[in-house]
Amino acid sequence: MKKINFAGFLSILLSLLTVVGCRTKNNEVRTDGTPNSETLTRINDSIPLPEHPRPDFQRPDWANLNGQWQFEFDS
Image (tube, rainbow, N blue to C red):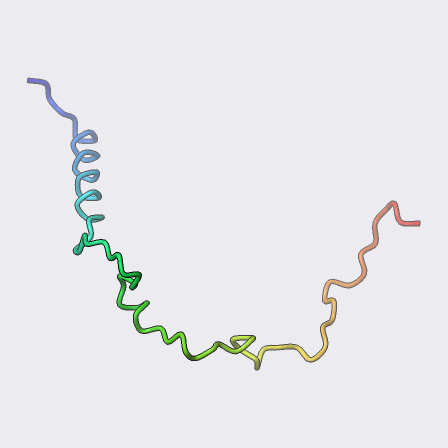
């Protein structure tokens, strides 16, 4: 029997652990259109979001902070 080197063994072990770790707890597929995650079920669609999420950070007047660009080929 051939000896398996340590790097080969380690890559096979990590591949198997990745496959096992990526499996989901619940493999059922919902057909009624409800979300599978608990986070999505807590979102309330009846409350509309404001136009800007943080209105305190809006500028009253926009200013170009970069200044006027001057190129070599400007006349």
